[in-house]
Length: 329
Image (cartoon, rainbow, N blue to C red; front, side):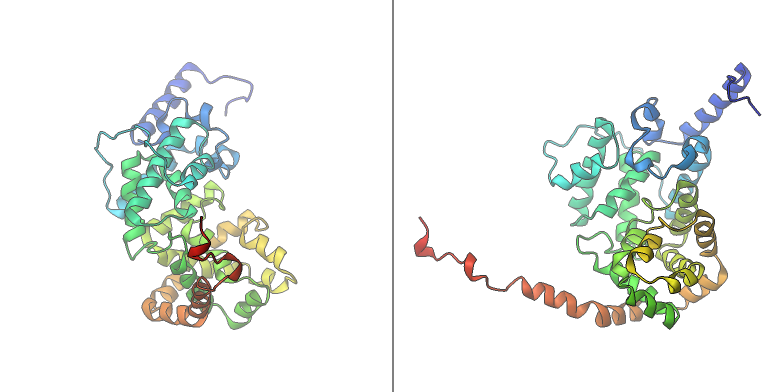
């Protein structure tokens, strides 16, 4: 154990440098930049990098990320990719989300370009996609990230429809999960005004990237990349089993909402929930679901009328906005 006031001996420094070099050899993302920590130490994407977990577990983190590629059957891109900024950044949300992710302008430019390409190919965009893209860019070059995001967006196993501007598919799955809870707990959540669409977008579409500390997040992501959205369902059930008594004791929405944002959830118990999500009882319970049938029921019972009404309202005539053609200059 080294004294905090002492510098490592030259041999130790060489060993640490060698470990870092091996890790970087398997990393094509922003973390491979020599000045990354100088430029990005306070980057928003690192908000949950508690106690410098990533700096202290770099090889481990890169190992997790490479395993995600393997789980998706994706090979790292060999493309000599174009880093030229887009001539037009398009939607302002891309620049805003890039600024909310990284600090250095070159990295922000790559975020903007990646998100713009995603919208072009996927036909829509939602901020949760930006969170996922931001984390992936730590480990992988933009073309590889785009390959990963394509699989997550398009494969029925992962997040199909979750990253649309109106994330109905994500809300539907939230209601499917809610139905699996014991009736008294389900009713308590609804009585507190905690509709699934108010929190599953963070858990599911954003895969907890801006809510779990990194030392727990990577275990959560391992489950997601291996088992797909089935793991998200398993975590949903494990979380509410862990915190059922707390929720039943809540009298108002704010305290319950703070728990669901993980702000009031003690880390040891969050860890238990993440680890429990792998348990056979949840695998079996979720695996037994007829997803198509349950999604149809969830949509019809909880969302169909609301969406119809909202969309119908777009046609409502507003007398004060009417301009007749013969009144125009």
